[in-house]
Length: 251
Image (tube, rainbow, N blue to C red; front, side, top):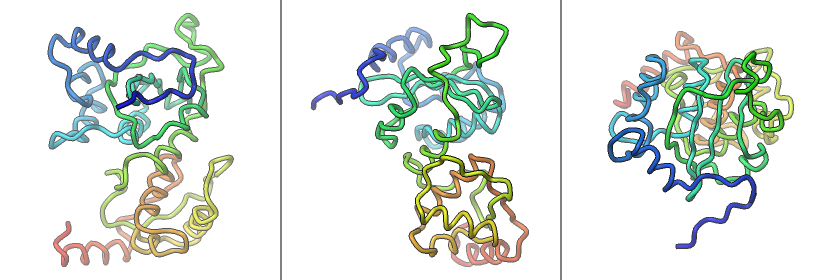
């Protein structure tokens, strides 16, 4: 097989094989896929969240990891593999920023479903304005977090609801959500405005024009990561959905 071509040229990214060798030396053991063997330096709450995603031997998805870091408001460096290269991504949840040696256009031009999490660790870099100026990355390499979260939800590998919003529930968009420059299709925009007016279940949303179950799931994940989703489990429709699932044996 031919090695995937990196369309963005500079900067020179580390090869995945060299990074795995570094991790083996760091760990003192054979490298393992995913992050479960290398998260001991993270906070206990974030460590527990990341370990939960790998229950059963699976690998952490990029969206899961970024979502966990945002939810726990922890600055982290996530090392992503694409092909034979490693892309370091530093997430600053409180500042709603990310730092990456690629431009955001370059990062989002990658096939997001093919990105794999190699390693997660506390961030070494500091956000813009920090007193430790020597640890602040170049200003041109800082980008807003919101577009990345949106694109990972809409085009990434995850096709199920994030655990925090899964299960019997009805959903509604928060009144203050600002779409701004987020690249939402006309069907998604129509669904968002409808969710501002009425609370709906996942099954209902999946039947709206231009949507299906997967697109509805991606939309709900994206809205949740924009802090734009209200989730109710006590709504009568959520309770009815719970009873339906019990009857089908899916709870």
